[in-house]
Image (cartoon, rainbow, N blue to C red; front, top):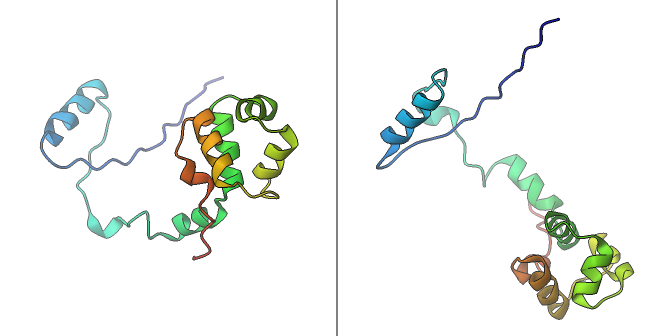
Amino acid sequence: MRVQEKMHRINVTLNGAGADLVAAAVKARYPDAEFVPDSDADTARWDTSELAARIRTMKSPGKLLRAYRERAGLTVVELSRLVGSKYPNIVAMEQDRRTIGLKMARKLSDALGCEYTVFLDAPSTTV
């Protein structure tokens, strides 16, 4: 039986000083790498795309809290101990059933190593 691994394409734009050096280093390490000329007709700004707008509407302080907690490798119980809260409160915050106040946002940011403002921002409703 023969197995073939498919390689996913990675699109990267190189510009500015040193772009040629980076391209040469990539080509030296990966001889099969393909370089195609940049075409502005095929590109779109990410921040104004429909997908970016949909992602922004799906973000909430609770979802961000869960993402940061999981990134830190903490359980809900461990995080609740670090911030001095009961774990059902953390669960309620992650499920957006409980708002995150300024004081709690600062405690969470200290425990999770992020900016406290991410937990205070209301989800965007523009699409």
